[in-house]
Image 1 (cartoon, rainbow, N blue to C red):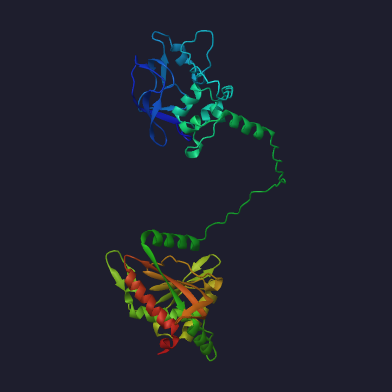
Image 2: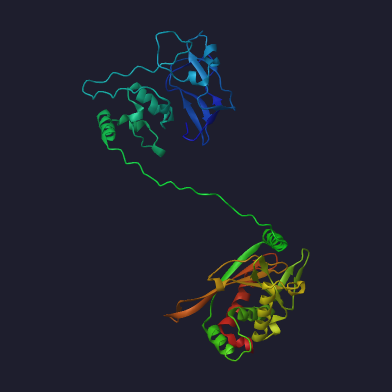
Length: 419
């Protein structure tokens, strides 16, 4: 009753032992894997036994009930394997409960001769057809295997039997038989080797995994993304590097701008402590750095009070120590806010996992040259996307948005960071 079911459940019997039934009677409600459906009887006789118990699953092909003549002995039928209780062709010898197909209805002389019924096979039971369509096909002597279904999923329904044309079906089968077989596809033999490498997890990676998993599954993250024009920042950086003792990077400018913005929005510079929220009035910015074994986050302390050159020199020193594994615990503790920048890898936009105990982390993408619209005119411009990950226990959407607006103002007009 469903093309995907492997077993069914008799929800309720609509007949009882001793009832006389005929073809077309609804005798039970059966639960399939998709719905509860009415089960239609195909044979005429008396209900001798209800084998399937309501509410218990039975496999496809197992006997549900016995229909025959009153007084017949059907014990041998139920004792036989499931395959032997499938509908069988009539035989001269008396069988305990032999099921026979109804005799074909007479066909008018003017109608085309029916296509001979093919020998029964296991595939007949696999055809998707409604019970009514099967009964009509049997009554009219139509081989249901030659009927094309127009119902859902190719299911054969009543109208397919009503409009079945044996001549057209025979011609289609003949044409299909005469069609040249498609040449087999020849694929070259390919022999591969499955191999892999396992490396022990370092303590650094274990610590990173534990902290980030705790952060991701404890702090309810939400994300705010904003585009920032970097044309003026590019010009300012070029002018600064012409006189600065240390080359200033765009990331150094983001650190400085973030530090100044955090002073104006201290809620972003906060920590969740369970029964209280700590709002930090000092700004210590962690700068995420990739090393061979994972990720380290050295901290630029009091970044709001340091010049761009000072921040640049400190970050470069941290980078060298990180690569040579000379960072000390004091270098990566005490952060109140974190910045993760993947712009140097060409990543335009991403989200970062909050670095505890911070309430926020800023993910910085690459600076991309693109076409921007300014006062109704298209012109080339440099655009950078940043995404702020926030702990919703501490920071609301409005607070995070206001912080990003201030950050955007600093980077789009860098001279304000020098005031």
